[in-house]
Image 1 (cartoon, rainbow, N blue to C red):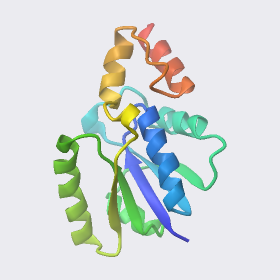
Image 2: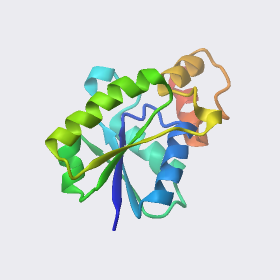
Image 3: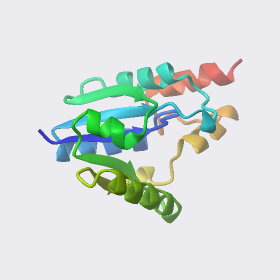
Image 4: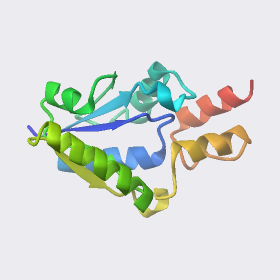
Length: 159
């Protein structure tokens, strides 16, 4: 069974992330969505909220597992018998950082490949940061995130 890990902070998950997940499932037998506990990013949503958003947004998708992690990504991938790590790339700026991380991961375990995937064109500009900024100013993000996330952002910014 070919297993891939798709890691991220997912604060919050966007339709661009969901697009990568669906396309990753066409390549791999099982996809593990690994929500990172990354306090350096000062997440808007608690890790359990982020996991729950993804679970609700991916209902009906088969062969997908969603959980959180706070270890070294390559160790997490190894523990889950993954042969690949999927990373989404939107722009050249994403590539430089992700290339460094991919090369480091290869140094730590050459048996686990890093796969770079571009989102569909309609989501190529999306980032969780932009979604949060627009939502904070009460902009319409309903076409850009799963409904459960739109509701969560609305509740978060109506306080």
